Length: 139
Image (cartoon, rainbow, N blue to C red):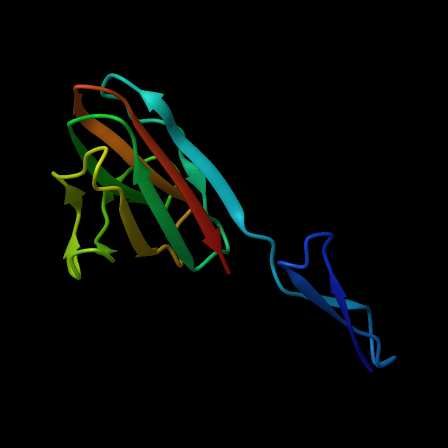
């Protein structure tokens, strides 16, 4: 018998298999949201997202800056970072960095993080304001 449980907001569901054939099994996942940078006005690595056991990551880049540059990194061992290719929804292109973005043009990106332990969104440069980066990773 399969029972479904929803969290308080109804955005995540878990299924519990209670068929009696063994221990109760939980499936499903809770999204992992990470704020990498909040209104940052200088270059920095920011906060890494822990993505162990997750598959996909969505990233939103916003801010008041007139220009900003981001670099995207992934770590399989949790220590060494290498560039990771992402998909920009606005332009339809794949890239390991974003040399664009301004107050008038926020950006949305998608990344595969399967097999990785960490994702990093580095703010490489920012001018004329601030920059914010928030991601959500899911299984």
